[in-house]
Length: 100
Image (cartoon, rainbow, N blue to C red; front, side, top):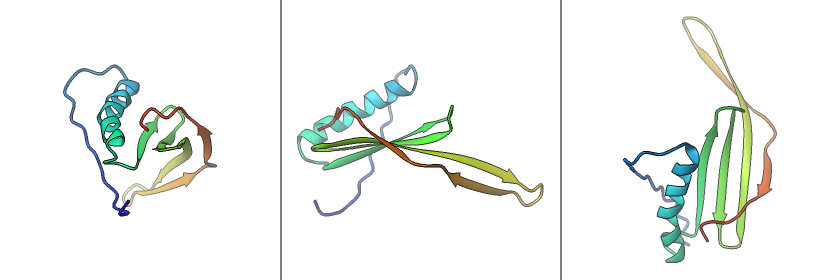
């Protein structure tokens, strides 16, 4: 409501089986904050190494989308290494809202 962006980090020392378990745990942490209106929205960022792409899961009351941003990363130079990030076309899709 005041325009302040917050960041939540979770240290969970239990064993997890893949990225989905980590997301499920983060949702468990965020859900009570959404219900208590401590947070107004959430953006969960995932790196999809197989594609490669970044997926941003946007969640707010009455709004839920997953945005995918594909990219390529090129490295050149031997002594003076340079990296070039090229973004592909963003796609968006509706998603189930597990937070709000």
